[in-house]
Length: 385
Picture 1 (cartoon, helix red, strand yellow):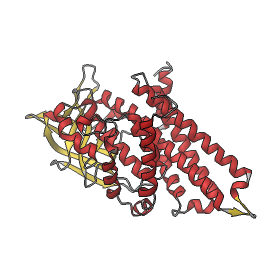
Picture 2 (picture 1 turned 180 degrees about the vertical axis):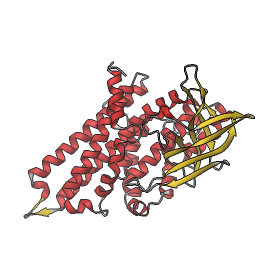
Picture 3 (picture 1 turned 90 degrees about the vertical axis):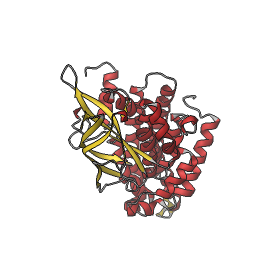
Picture 4 (picture 1 turned 60 degrees about the horizontal axis):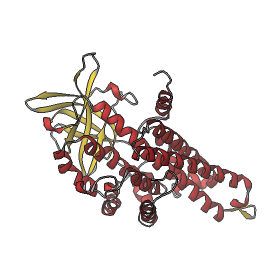
């Protein structure tokens, strides 16, 4: 991939998802959002388009594309709605990717085809009630007993974990102690419906209201020893890799929201009249929208660069953190400015910018807060940990 120019295949994909978002998502998503309902029909259509299988090989039921293709799809979806975009992002980068990256051949054969088709969703159980950004402080534990993992603990804010098509969740758990006394953290696959595994409260959220987010509870939940994902004790390192990749995807989603704010503001500035002219004729509005476009453009270049480094097999941790930081800031700033362009109408849920404003803030928090991104960038520059 050229870092600044799309290939024919990527350009065609981007155009196809753009058309899907405009024709299939935009007309109906507001109703789902206000009802706080999961958009099963839209997700099914995304599955038939192959979006959930974009970065996976055809042998696993995927489309044989790459991670950048996923990012392009996320950007185009988020230009219209972030709930749909985060459902795809979490289903792929958090639900299916750990199994693809670290799972056994049997785990891949069993689970990936349904996850790639969108018939089923996977989730990633990392965050805990007292953990937040300190994922190393995991309290959920799993012990081996009679050839089974017995899991106890609680996970918080888990996307795609409580839908009717959720098939599994991969959870991090303490499975022992290292020689230095630090916890040994492993990843374990838990199928939906396993006794002792329950989906707790559905959160009342500020934004992402058409996506699924729940608490998960494990009470003497038993799964086979073979459900270990990757090496025992490598769960912490594995999820760091997953989160590095996921930050590029969240950056792409953030760019989509930022660009959607530009799209809506440009349209509205032509339609809305004040003092005898369309508001787009006034320099104050023009300058505000120009700044918004500049933020979206800069953030897009940042995630393109991080994705290209990842696909080239180059180090990309710093670039992914920069992309996530810059893009989430752009989304938040553009959402605020778009609301200002719309004035009182921007505060109404009848207009997309109202959803954009409600959805933007979580982008500075999820999959690593802005503060965590700054910490990672500083460490990659050689500053003390």
